[in-house]
Length: 164
Image (cartoon, rainbow, N blue to C red; front, side):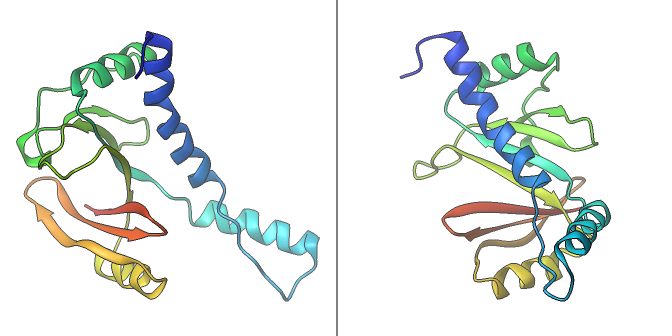
């Protein structure tokens, strides 16, 4: 049980930090080049293929407390519930994306932090995930006025894709 505001803030911010660290560390391999050439090649690839979190979804039974902690820590204001996003309360991210905090939508939905990465072609991205061994939990689905999203599971982790 979380007993202090500091523990609550750490609980809420830890998933965000993990997403940012994961997004900034995407190794690639290039067997045909030396270590020096490979490092330069890796850095160029990271610059060319930078990922963007379009929507960071937090599902929790403590929606208001989570929004309060994030708002206090980051100086943002969360919206009223947005029906199209499962009644998530949202706030803007610096890169143009959004963070949404919502309650579970069914009794079996457990708390989760799910980043939705922006893609140009959601159908191709879903196929690539399946080819890598992912199970599609939710095929591409349009949310009027918001974009198209999909969810897949790989390695026990839920991943989201988002196309504008």
